[in-house]
Length: 469
Image 1 (cartoon, one colour):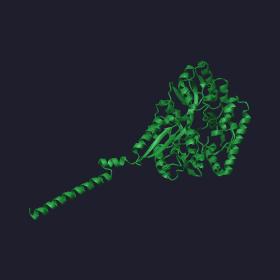
Image 2 (image 1 turned 135 degrees about the horizontal axis):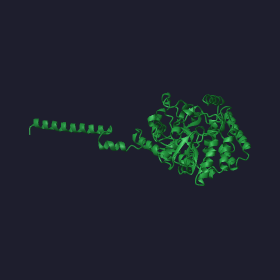
Image 3 (image 1 turned 30 degrees about the horizontal axis):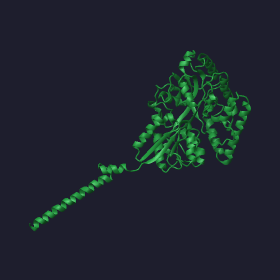
Image 4 (image 1 turned 120 degrees about the horizontal axis):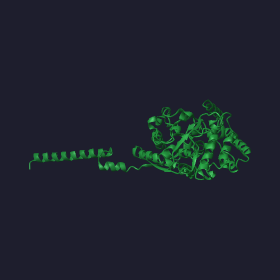
């Protein structure tokens, strides 16, 4: 074999080997960039996901919230997996236990009586100011960022998601049976209607229902009536004086007690919680109750079974009183736990929920704080009761929930009202006076300790009065 041939053969072999190496390098490059090769796909799939826990209260919201959680788990590029749990009426106890044990969820809902001032003071949650730019704020109603209860020490801790307000809900089927053509406009008419309904019900159904085992039920009755009449704001705070004044709620509380005395109220109201009451209303066991704008979705989407034809109406007030705007507040904010290992990724999920709020409006949920979510195209006008629950222009939000900043020594409002109710109103004057004194003493202590700045409270009061009736 000639030397020339051998040299040529060696050159060919070297060339083939070089091409094989280059091809191998090219394939390796594809794998590193996560392209089409099996080994590259396996490498990506082997990346361990960051798991973040997310807890919320309202179990009946699982449907839409879980859809968003599922979407986020599929779409996010941060390799995050959200583990979502809902707890219903036991939510506050679950969260408090988790916080105290040092093992809280990464994200949790501000609900069930939890308040930012107390959570932030204890160091349980993180501020979100660095994430919330002025440009981002423009997507929301201006009033949202005027709400002091979402701040602590001038730092923002949550952006509330929804508007919350109450209306009278009434059973049109029972009204028809009783010969009542329209919902009551005054409390006197409400009592008269309740008498007619309870009489024809003969123990099968009653005129009015109140779930007084659930603490917030006291407020949804007395606070709403007194706010519409311009007497007090929520929890007995008098925005005209900057002090608490539960004495001004006496007439509304006595009216509720009178429904009990005259057997017009569904029996055993003090042992009736709100979820059971809602089920009973849907079963036609009483004709009227005061409840929130979220009930449009709960009944409309069959999250709570409802077998009756119902509608909503403005909450009645006492005859001769001037009707002002309805009391509204913002809620359902999500907070980030201080102990989370991934605060940036937790915020990414919180923002995802905020940016997709139209999903809730589409299924009859309350109007949202994100303005674009409330576009008419998103509102399901075919849902029962919805027309009075989208009447947002006749609502007003007080700029601070002052009671959330206080530590009350002795019985709070809910406990005091329960005792007054049990006693049939006996001793009501002294009880309301002492309750007022307890709250105002706590307010003064909060100001002295610096938890509330007197000048901030004064500015807040001025803003409230400016937007009053």
